[in-house]
Each structure stands twice: as C-alpha cells, then as structure tokens.
Image (tube, rainbow over all chains, first blue to last red; front, side):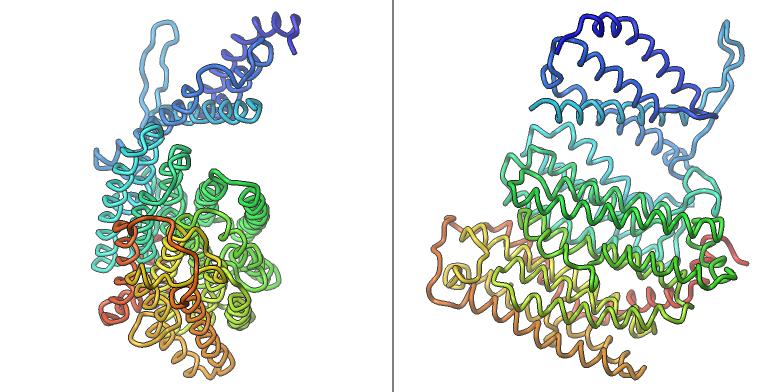
Length: 136
Length: 492
C-alpha cells in the first residue's frame, strides 16, 4: 500500500528521527537514553522508510542487518575484553576529558563504545525480525 | 584478581560471534565450533583446578566491589557444573557435526549452540540473583530457537508450549526477585544470605521461598510441574534433545541447590517439602517412562524421575546427602546425554525410535548395543557403575536421618528404572524382527562421542575416589554458606 503523503512525510522525518536517535545515544551516558533506545528509534525509522516506499520489507539485501548484529556483538565484547589484557577485571571502563573546538571540554567514556555495540545489535535485530515477519 | 571465571562465558560468546559470520560455510563452522569448545573446555578445567587449590573464586565486573557491582562467584559446585557442561557439550557437538542436516546447520545452529553455552555457564558462575535471571533468559532464548529449528508443525507446537511455560516461570522469577529486593535491598547472593537471616517477617520470607521453589521446580521439571518436559524433548532432533536433556533441567536443579542452601535452608517447611517432592518426582517420572513405547519419550520421562534423586540429596541436606546429590547430577548429565545420543544413532540408522517397530539392532551395531547396556545399567545404578555410588550415598544419608519413606521409594524406583532400560534393550536391540537398516556403514565419529560419555560414566564409578573429594568439597561449601559470604564480602 503506497501513500504519497506518507512517502513525502518520511522523506523529511527520516533524518530527524536519526538525528534524535543520535541525541538519545549521546545523552544516555548519565541520563535516560543510550544505545538500546537509540537503536530502537533507528530501527523504527528504517522500518518506517520501508513502509513508505514501494519496496516490500522482505526485498533487498538480507545479509546486512544480520551481519550488523555480529559486528555489534564484536564491538561490545571487545570493549569488555580489552581491560583483561591491561590487567583489570572484565568490563572495567574508563573515561577522560578532551578539549574539542567549539564544544569545549567534553567527557569521553569507553562505556559509550560498549553502548555503540548495543546500538548495532538492537538495530540489526529489530530490523531482521520485522523483515522476517513481513517477508512472507 | 584473576579474570579466569569469565572465560567459560566469554569464549563461547566470542566464538558465537565468529560463527554468526560463518553461517554459510557449514564445514568451516564445524571446525571453528569444535576448536572453540575445546578451548573453553581447557578454561573450565583450569577453573576447576584453581577452585580446588585456592578455594572460592570471585570476579568483580568492571572493578566495582561487591555488593555494589555484579560478581561471578565460583565455588566448587559451580566449577564442577561448568566442567561437566563442557564435557557433554563437546561430545554433543561432535555428534551434531556428523548427524545434523545442512539446512539446520545453515540456520545458525552453531552460533545458537554457543549462545546456549554462554547462558548455561553464566547461570552456574554468577553470584547475583538478578544476574541469574538474565543468564536463564540467555539460555532459554537460545533453547527456544534450537528447539524450533527447521521444525514441522509438531515441533513448533511443542516449542510454543515450552515457550509459554518458561515465560510464565520467568515472570514468577522476576516477581520473586522484586519481593526479595524489597525485603533486603540487595541482590548479591552473599549479602542476601546475610540479610535473609535477619528478615523479621517469616510469612513474607516463606512467600519468597515458595515462589523461588515454584520457579525452579518448573525449570527443573519437578513433580507436579514436569508435564511440559517429555513432549518438548521429543520434538527436536535427538542431538538437541540430548543436550537439553543432559543440561537444561540441571540448571534449574543447580539454582535450587544455590537458592535453598544460601537463602531458605532455615525455614522449617522447605526441606521436608523438598524430600516429599523428590519422592513424588521419582515415582511419577518412572511410571510415566514405563507407559511409553518410544525410546526418546522413555528417556525423557527418566530425566524427570532422576531429578528426584538430586532433589532428594538437597532435601536431606547433610554432608553425605549433598555430596551424593552432586555426584548424581554429574553422573546423570554424562549418562543421560549418552543415552539420548544412542537414541539419535538408532534413529539415524533405522529411521525411527518407536520401540514397537525397532529390533535386532545388536546384529548390525553390536558396539552401540554394548554402550547402551552399560549406560542403561549405569542409570539404573548397578554396581560398580557411577549411578550405584550416587544412589548408595543418598540411601546411606536417608537411613542415617531415619527418612525411611524416601529410601524405600528410591529403591523401588531404581528397580523400575532397570526394568525400563531392559525394556528398551529388549525391543530395540535384542528382538529378532525389526526395521532394516537405512544408513550404510556405521558412523565412527558419532560412536566416538557416545563412547567418550559412557566411558567417563564408567570411570566415574570405578574411580569414585577421585571424583568424591570434589563432590565432598562442594557439599561442605553448600553446608557452610559463611565460606561463600566471606569470599565475596571479605572476612566479617
């Protein structure tokens, strides 16, 4: 079912949704938000773009989103495992402050890398599941 | 602080990720999965030896000290369970490599297998109640997928029931966790153990105890909550039911051991109730087995029946009884998995596991028949096999405490188990007429995986003096929760 109104609307809301997902992701370190919610939002945006377009969600490359789960797990597991090689317990995280032009002093935490892994797993998972359910 | 306790979880997880990318290359997947399993096996062995030499191991994740952070606490029971998990999973994996059809292999069998190990090992190692819930979910989600893999209508139907039952029990689990958190303000097992003893309201404590016993009774398939098990384990390919039959219910049994010993052992009704449930589970399980005419179904009912013996060890709650119960768990995981794999080999060779249609397997596969005989006698508890030692200890403990009822039931059930094993032997292997063989040539790798498990079972019986000290140490640690508490929270 193709709707012109939805298609035009999605053309403008899609980048906004992704931007909001990025905002949620970064905000998540010390307040509500984070990789999981940002992942859900991104997946919702992708699914919305499927609905708005003429393509069926089942079409298109199948491998990408499954591989995304794998890459996400890789990122998360690596961030958790690196401290082991530095002599700390598994999952130990650190953070530091960096001066970034325009933004000033910014806190960078290694935990957000783990969150990035979570984000990828969630996006890959949700999109794969929805595609599988609608594909046939 | 050593990172050793995380390895039995982290290594399967890493291999699962790699296997996810190798999903289109079954041959390579088999090699990688097997190699990963052997490495994890080595890590588990190292962990067991470390626990034996240095006592309880604690790993605090992210360098957050207990009770604020999440910990892995490995006592002897946990280390033993991880070890035996790796033994049977390696044997099962070998069997799977040579028996599974390719569509299933391509449909993420190997990654799911590794994720299942992540969940099982995590449950055995964690020292945190909520974390236990999470690991249970990891293993359950993998098991849902494995159970429904490539399924027809019957398999999907049984998986759905399995899913509903387990989702319900997980829900209860979470409710229990919430109540316990509101009572004590902590979820760390060690701190819970200290604070549960100080809870002023015995009624609320009893409610929590009942909820947790209910939850783990469903997972461990205890009377009267075992109805889901025989049908669920009949549906998937035998290698998957073998792995589940050997391992999954035992995670529930382990959780009961852990929770009862640390939190609820001082409540007056808990232990007698467990003894009663153990007797009923044994008896009704074996009655169910006697009424069945399919090898896999008979074996599934025997899982239920055997779990009664383990819970008998917990219910009697003495040094001898607990050591016997732990010995029983290890023996059961090895032997039961072997029996399921034998059923799988028969199914591959004859195309069915129906006792009425099989027969004469001994003529073409004498070795398989021999292995079944040994494993079956071991399960029933004929000396000098491993089941005998385990039952001897349990019965000894029962007599010492004057619990003659449960001793009588357990002896009766042993006879019925023997009868039921002989029934399988007579119909599947001994009888003259029967279905012809459909597969040319026996498969050596499949036989090897069965033989390893059976021989380990035999070795456990003959070399009981080697295994016993481990079980005794585990029992001692269970009886003295203050050792566990001191390891996690430091000396008081």
